[in-house]
Image (cartoon, rainbow, N blue to C red; front, side, top):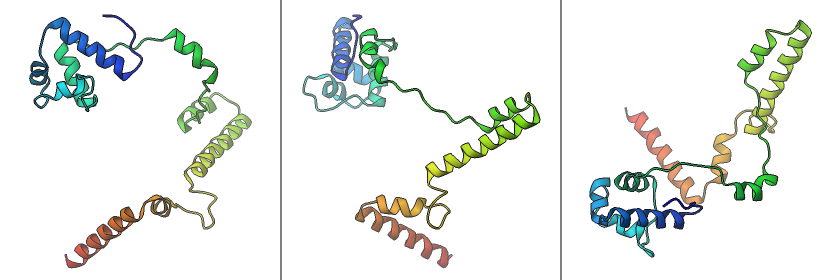
Length: 168
């Protein structure tokens, strides 16, 4: 079967078709793939309740003797192409130095300034520059983002670690 697959339901249908084509049972697939008993049935059944995960997907594909090949979908590309945005990449310091070696001294100074500016922008994006007091704010930001239970668990763990060090 060589129909295009565009969603998970289509993938499951194709796997079911391959199983029927090879005339093997779900239990046989479980055995070959190393999955728990009746797991393939739960995945490939219409209302099975389980979905393909990384391990089960790889196992079932292998047991059926199938592989995936990604190809461009011209219809979908036509629908979404006008929404694509080019990535803006900050050049690495090594790439900037390679260009600088073939430039004049004044151009090299400009390039060094651009590298420093790029580093500054990355640090601002990470929140390490421009804060009220300056310096890293990772722990405080992480704590504000946590729910109360997670903060309590983290504080409890920190206390246990602190007391374990004092007792040693």
